[in-house]
Image 1 (tube, rainbow, N blue to C red):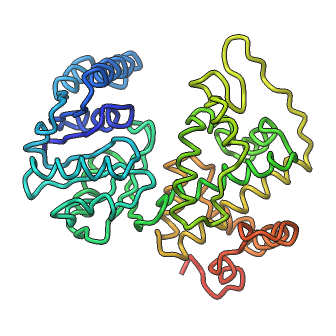
Image 2: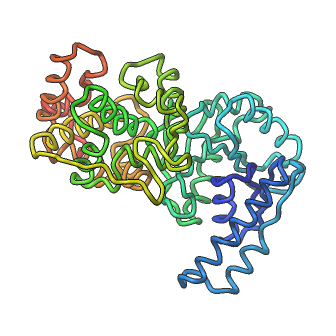
Image 3: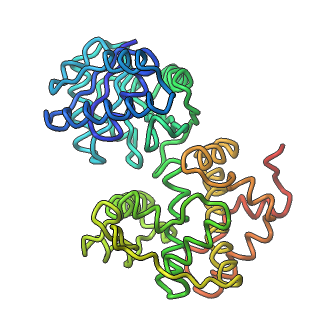
Amino acid sequence: MRIAVIGGGTMGSGIGQIAATHGHQTVIVDSSKDQLKRSKAGLQKILARLVEKGRLTRDESVATLDRISFSTDIEATSGSGLVVEAIIEDLAAKQAVFDQIEKHVDSSAIIATNTSSLSVTSVAGSCKEPQRVAGMHFFNPAPVMALVEIVPGVATDESTINAIMNVARSWGKVPVVVKDTPGFIVNRVARCFYSESLRIVDEGLATPAEVDEALRSAGFRMGPFELMDLIGNDINLAVTRSVFAAFHFDQRYKPSFTQERLVEAGRLGRKSGSGYFMYGDDAEKPAVDLGSSKAAMIIDRVVAMIINDAIDTVFWGVASPGDVDIAMTKGVNYPRGPIEWGKEIGYPVIIERIESLRSRYMEDRYRVSPLLRDLASNQVDFDG
């Protein structure tokens, strides 16, 4: 099957690499010749590094590159069995691209969007055949991260979902089916990792470095602030704003003034040389004086909010408990699935922590999921 990828940025190039590595003739389409040059050079560098590390032979690397072509003409999607769009997170731009794709591919072709937070149903709204459109959300870096969120729109056929699931599995990915809701699983549940950490810093209860150290000690590979600096504070803030607006301004997903001010100041993270931390050869690591009680406070607050929102995601039928845990461990490398983690800590303990915060702040962001209450009272059990 021929694969077309729309967008030659980091994500599009990564998806193209995956497809070509698994034997597909692949075309990467981008309106910018310069972007395509960067994509080709980047792929050559990545594949050369894989050869150096012994993960690919030189012949396999050459064959993979030979299977990838580059084009500025969307007509190059013609003959593709699967087209994956990976352009900017702008609904109008995506709809315009999908309208063009439909003009050039066969009626049997599947068209997927890599959107991380937009409605798949809305993206498909410009299509004459929305039944063949679905979300296929990869995580960065796409060739490395195992998770793919598969998102049916309102009109998506079950056969479309099954076909995309099969493709994802053939590429060595772990696909999970997710309801078309804001942020899907990962970008919804992960908001709490960032937002509650930001809230603790906003209140002056801890520094970013202290929060990071505490959460690393709890098993997270990276703290939220170093991770936001790596992602880019502008990108992280944009996703937060998108999820906040899509959830009709639910206070649980409210953006932080601290992050907004950093973005306004151009402190975007590693790519700008400064964010929550300073970067460069002369940058000094911030001092951390983290006592056990402060560390416990940070871990308890952040983990409780993650667990509560993960369980609420199941309550609203976004995904199954098992898929939520798979998504958070495979998509963002959480130390364990939040639902499994909640059971280990004890559902009544999580409720007590959240209700204590609600009693103190009297804010709707600290509300307990109805399903968490049912689990705590043994009215339901995820183990059946």
